[in-house]
Amino acid sequence: MSTDARKTETIPQWKQEEVDELVEFVDSYQSVGVVRVTGIPSRQLQNMRADLHGKAAVRMSRNTLMERALDEVDDGLEQLNEYVAGEVALIGTDDNPFGLFKQLEASKTPAPINAGEVAPNDVVIPEGDTGVDPGPFVGELQQVGASARIMDGSIKVTEDSTVLSEGEVVSAELANVLSELGIEPKEVGLDLRAVFSEGVLFEPDELAIDVDEYRADIESAAAAGRNLSVNAVYPTSRTVGTLLAKGAGEAKSVGLQAAIEDEELMPDLVRRADSQLRSLAALIDDEDALPEELRGATAPAASPDTETETDGSDDEDTDDTDAEADAADDVDDDDDEDDGADGLGAMFG
Image 1: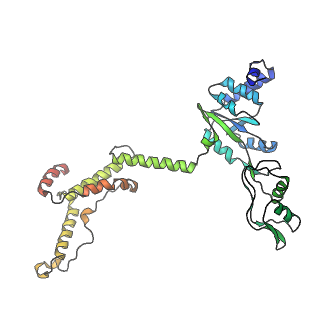
Image 2: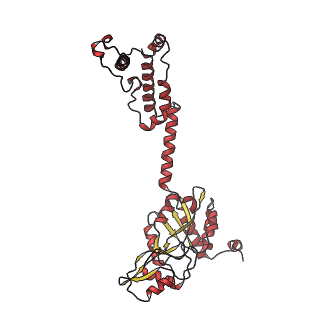
Image 3: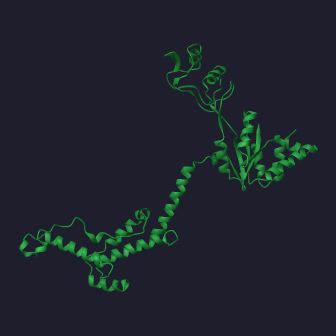
């Protein structure tokens, strides 16, 4: 008889009460998922549920009853029925799906692997002293594929030895060797198969994100947005200070290039004139033609008229606005200075 047919039949009172409790459970949380509980010992499962107390709750029941409950709640939660197969349980939380997935992954613990189980990953016996006295165990190690020998009164593995590849079945011999060495090659925990939250169904591969990388991407996007705002001269509460500092620096650069006699610019203009005068004096060979204070003058290492201060601007902002500042510095010195002074004089008052 099909599952759909069974769902249309009248069910016993105790089953309906169980379904009602499951519906109440599902309605109590913002995020509801299906977790696989296969292979988890009862005591370990109880410990996991205790660790999740206050953060998430696990509810176990018959699969058919969980499916009925999800169908009754509807609102998209019936999509979880696709994942209700095998040994599973419902899990509910008010945390977001990403937080739930991270929490479940962090709660997994190493566990021994038994004969007949499939290796979840490559099984490696590491190089080193096993701590086992010389005896038949060295042969057991060699039999399962480990490089082992007796050295200095103990059995040692001479190199890292992969004794089983991912997906292969564990033999009884290997299970015994791993147990003797205390190697626990698998992780036991609640495997999230899917979670439904705020109308969206998430699967594990969508939730397994690198938090540090994600944070770096967000920070990079925020920095790019800030630089775009600065370069587009679009003022916001975060960029207005930088824009004002940038504008002041550009205005000062224009004022210096145009030799505007402004009170704030005069010290820089005087320094630039002195630099130009000393550069010219350094080119004159006849010292008798020079005033005494300019005799032996040498050309300055750098021209102060190219130095502008933009106090208050952040280093990260100036990197993206250097091109605009350079453009302001490239004003043609050969332009008519008198005309420039007349035009810009009004600007600077």
